Structures are given as structure tokens and as C-alpha cells.
Length: 380
Ligand code: FAD
Image (tube, rainbow, N blue to C red; front, top):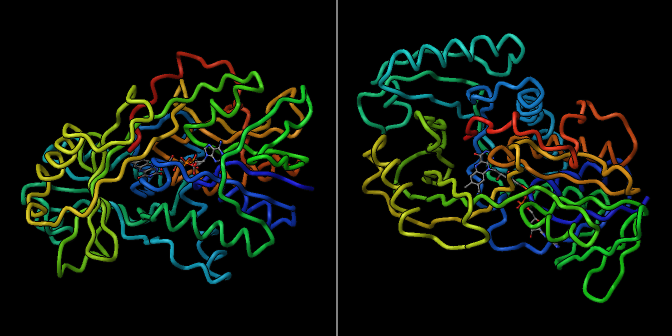
């Protein structure tokens, strides 16, 4: 079975890997647009602390985090260990004891279904500061042992190499689709046609333009995120946890003395791939407000990414009814590095006509978008 995957962010790369692993003949094409979400994503894996309360969405979100326990060893068997993945824990911080109490009770409830949350401990401000030294001295916290982080760029690159290991081909280029009615659409790359039995569209925020010639109006918008990378010379940041203060901003650390401060959520900015004065000011002031110790850090870079966000805030995952062999994966919004690897596996099952491990009916890509499902409470 010949399958073309269009778009190789985390979702397309994972879909390609899972398809190739099952023996399918996979061709991946990716244009590597400036602002692809996977290359800018922070990489926090801690769905249990989110306010997502719809059972179907939460199940997918939590299962996405759990799936890393299978994926990381599977990639490691192929020599793919450079993912920036570490279970460094997550720290919910606040000066408000009521807020911390309610976060703690939510986590303890969720842990009954999700033991991978691990220990949930209340910490005094000095214990909080010992775990993440640049923080203010007055923040108490809840430590979640199972919280983790991953580097989206490195993860997607590893998944692609793993797909190639299983025989997939990966090409750079811009794809166009041509309608063939209810038959598998024709895929054009430059002047060539790639013949396929199935086509998977995982083209992130750019998917609506790609699908328009098929008469499909995909309700996806780009949401710009600006995210700042800081370097703390001489600091051993490897084991610093993800920090989740009230609101949608956050901090996390990677192994190379790097701290990442995120992020703006700018709907309506279109595909404007720029670092703006207001975006920079917002992210830095939120970061320094809770972690003044970052004031002396070197500002290394600001990344800009376009989160693919659906009209009702829910993912779009599955087969397009009435068009043979056309499968869509999209709408992972602010949660795609958590959900993407698992969602790729579920999409591979759809393509191969197998029953996915989770019911994808609520995520039908061309469902009627119900206003009552909107707005989803902000994901981090
Ligand atoms: P993308 O990564 O955007 O990939 C789409 C790909 O399709 C691109 O490479 C593009 O070039 C290609 N493409 C498009 N059109 C075509 C075409 N016509 N032909 C060929 N190729 C094409 N998630 C978390 O779980 N935790 C986080 O902490 C987190 N933080 C984030 C912070 C920021 C600032 C941002 C922006 C996102 C964050 N996310 C996070 C969300 C996550 O990064 C995204 O949901 C996820 O990366 C989306 O992946 P994707 O594969 O759907 O899309």
C-alpha cells in the first residue's frame, strides 16, 4: 500500500513512522515552512495539570503523555535517543494556597486513572526554589513527579529517521492536491504526480489552503506563539522541572543551561512570522515576574510558531467521509507535542483500516463544529 504523508511536523513524522513500522510503503513530503509549530513548541508534557475537563479530549491528551513510555524505548532501540526527553517533573507554583489546594486535589483524582502522574507533593517556597533556583522566594508549589519535557524539533527529526529506517522516503517540497471526486486525490510535487492509495494531510496551519481545491473547508487557523530561549552560563539545568504558574505562561529547562520562557497566544495574527516588541515584552515580563533570577541570562533566540487551532479547539483526526483514502490530522493547538506521537499512531491505524486504540469519532475532521464545545479552557 502506497501512502503519501504531507507535512512532517510531529504529527506527520509520527504517522509516517507508525505506518512504515507496519510495513507500508510511505513517502513523506514536507516544505519546512517558517513557523511550523513543532519547531517552536515548548515541549511540556503534563496534561494532568490542565483544565481540560471534557472526557474524550482529556482521555486523548492523557493517553498522549502516557504513550511516551512506549515511544521513547521503541525509538531508542533504533538508536534514536536524542529527543530532549526527560521526566524532570512539573511544578505548579502560586502564592495562593486555595489555588494550590485545588490543583493538588485535581491531580490526586486524576492519578487514580493515570498512575504515571507519580508522586504529587506539596512544597514550601524554599523547596520550590531549590528545584528551580531563578524563581522568586515566595512561591509555594505542587510537584508532579511524572511531568516531562521533550524537544519538538529533535523528536520530529528522530521520528522521521525512524520512518526512513523502516523504508519510508522523505522529500522536501511543496505539495498540491488535485481533486478526483470521491477517489484518492492526486498529489503533485513540482511537476510530478505521486500515485498513492492513501494520502494523509498533516500540514498544520497550512492545511486549509492545501485542501481547498478538494472543496474541503478545514476550520483551522494559525495561532502565533512567540517563545524565548535563554542561556544561563555555567548553570546545570538538566533536572530543573517544568514550571507552571497561574495563567498560560510557563518556564522549562533543557540540558544545555537553557531555559525556555513561553509563550504568546496570538489569534488573528495570520502567518506573520515576526518577533514583535509586544510579544517579546509579554513573554519576558511574565518570566521575570516569577523568576527574577533569569534577569542575567543571555537571550539566545525567540522562536515563532503557528499552532494549528480548530474552530472549537478540538483536534481533527480521521478519515474524510466520501473521499476514499483521504485522512486528516490537525488541530492539535497548544497540545500537539503531547498528543502528536500517539495521534500519529492512531492515524496510521485509520489508514491501515484497523480499529484505533481510542475512539476517534469525537474528532471527526469534518464534524459540525459545535459552538457549545468552545472555548476550550487554555491549554499550556
Ligand atoms: P506543524 O509542526 O506546523 O507541521 C506542519 C508541517 O506541514 C510543516 O513542516 C509544513 O512545512 C508542512 N506543510 C504545510 N503545507 C505543506 C504543503 N503544501 N506541502 C508540503 N508540506 C507542507 N504542545 C505541547 O504538547 N506542549 C507544549 O509545551 C507546547 N508548547 C508550544 C509552544 C509554542 C510557542 C507553540 C507554537 C506550540 C506549542 N505546542 C505545544 C503545540 C505543538 O507544537 C503543536 O500542536 C504541534 O507541533 C503541531 O504539529 P503539526 O505536525 O500538526 O504541525
